[in-house]
Length: 277
Image 1: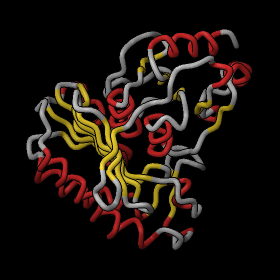
Image 2: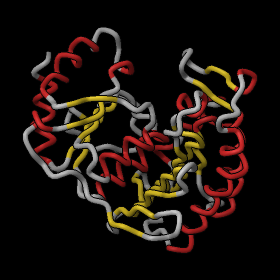
Image 3: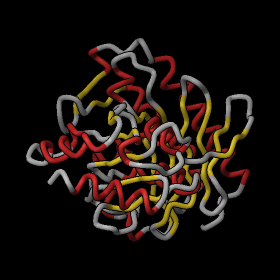
């Protein structure tokens, strides 16, 4: 399934809106301790909103894509074997029901929903929804990336222009790197004008795909965080690859993913991080 039609894309967007309205927005600012659980670490959270939204999206997307492997973040948390099937699946749909759960659970409006459609191991469509503002980023392979406002107005996305790395702003989630690597990356961050993290892939990809930020370096490759965002950034004119130079694929289990405005900038940024070693 290389071509995702306008009708399918619109239907998935509507499914995401409905799940947000039913499961996420009513719980925002009303999250209680009883509705929050931890997973792999004290700050790796899951809430009733995550679970409810994933249930709704899984049901809806199964109807649109009956032959697809459904890869939901919370389903994988319960059954990690689902993720091992992603690389061999002819068609897969990846779901992040609430991206930025820590922000959501603490009353910060920097969270989103992410859906990626993967065909033959390659992302062919990605949608990122922002429930608080009601808008989307949407991308299809070879067809560009777009911001779709709540009223339906569409604006084509473009990444930041290339420039000296000393003038670049980017995302580096230092806390997500192994402890022994953190001093290395911390020193490297001094090469750039500013680095930060927003604890939310949905908003970090929004920033790099719209040109608000120049680059991002990611320590983990969870497909629900990156499959849709990498495609969106690529279709907005950007360049991304692992620090090893290998092209990103949604089924990858490890590596450091770097996104930049173009290939030349990517190499300059990569060197900047290497010089901290």
